[in-house]
Image (cartoon, rainbow, N blue to C red; front, side, top):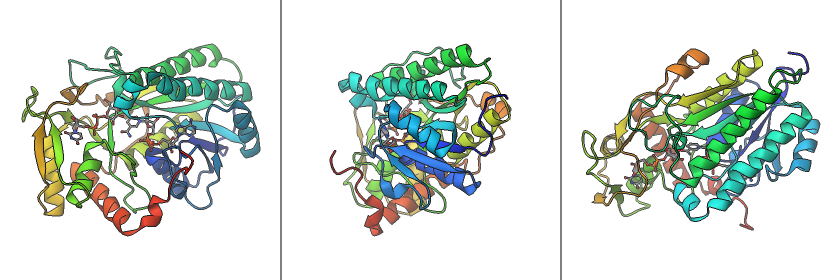
Length: 350
Ligand SMILES: NC(=O)c1ccc[n+]([C@@H]2O[C@H](COP(=O)([O-])OP(=O)(O)OC[C@H]3O[C@@H](n4cnc5c(N)ncnc54)[C@H](O)[C@@H]3O)[C@@H](O)[C@H]2O)c1
Ligand SMILES: O=c1ccn([C@@H]2O[C@H](COP(=O)(O)OP(=O)(O)O[C@H]3O[C@H](CO)[C@H](O)[C@H](O)[C@H]3O)[C@@H](O)[C@H]2O)c(=O)[nH]1
């Protein structure tokens, strides 16, 4: 397309020092793509960025920095992972979430339009659906987020939709793929990256910490849901498959494909109890656990409708089973325990 940057152009990965972004960096590098990371290291880690990948330490809302970075590195596509992700925190500090996730995404999208960067891939979330009543959840399901985190992401989707509508037909076209992730888990199969959280909230991460003795016990947040075993059901996707979906989205846009909003999951749900049983099976160790009350805002079941991603992207998941997800998460947790350099502090000033 006229005015577009060439396919060999560098990919900017915002939030590339974080959990999912660092796996996307690995997936891009493994395919020989040039990558630059922009990260403020608020939750990310310098050590998550592989050697040889430039890390620009800065804020994704800093337009002067962005303009300079785009020109200096010849950026052709932006993959936007940077953001704040803790749902209960978003309820306590909504304006901080709207600022970091929505206002700063606005600055980034605007900087792209001004620089003529026409390809944008965005980390969205199943949280845009809220508490859907019907499963599986396809992309036409009504969008009714129930917390500021989901709303802050949905607003960014809308900015992308409207920007593509306004600029999509011009010579410097703007097209995007928004990927709505379901439950992301696991770690790079080669052990190069994984999840490092100061305060873990995700089930598989907490289970890994518990079974390795870092926590006394895990609490199941409610077993009285209207689900087969009473615990919540989620669609867990391996982080490396998700990273590959980003590479597939990049290829889609580079081939001139249209803007898309796509669920990312496997279309299969597991209950909390099933996940915990898998942790016990993989380790051969009992997992200390007890039943606690429901956690506010937890939908009983979230399972992705995955037809659309299947027909739109050239994406074949390679790690689509719970055992692989759990085993890779556990292997990473063992590595964290042994190798403290992985835990190199993010930004000491925060
Ligand atoms: N983890 C999940 O299960 C999940 C599910 C759905 C969607 N997502 C989305 O995926 C993206 C990545 O999530 P993650 O789990 O890797 O989280 P993470 O906290 O590990 O990564 C986020 C990264 O963004 C950086 N960052 C935050 N604000 C920034 C700013 N203003 N400027 C520059 N860098 C900034 C952080 O330092 C960090 O490296 C987020 O946008 C999140 O909303 C995550
Ligand atoms: O110690 C724990 C932690 C979690 N859970 C349960 O395990 C399930 C999964 O919980 P997670 O916190 O791992 O994930 P969520 O489904 O709450 O959230 C995920 O999906 C959301 C979309 O709905 C957002 O995208 C969010 O960023 C992402 O982490 C839930 O039923 C939760 O109650 C427990 O029982 N005990």
